[in-house]
Length: 70
Image 1 (spheres, rainbow, N blue to C red):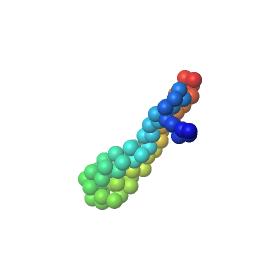
Image 2: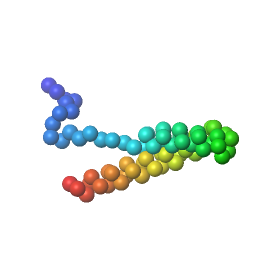
Image 3: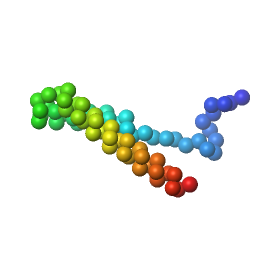
Image 4: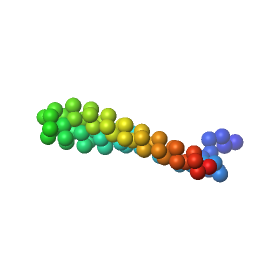
């Protein structure tokens, strides 16, 4: 009895970009935070916020695009 089998016709691999966007944004934000504000935490917070918003927007676009294909 395989209830949690991932093999089958309806199995699709889903990729989420919000987490990756937040991590990359935080890393880039640290760099710019040090250069512009001389504050690592502020730059990291701003970068993580921007990355999260951009990643969520990409997720929404990809989700919207897959709904219209079906």
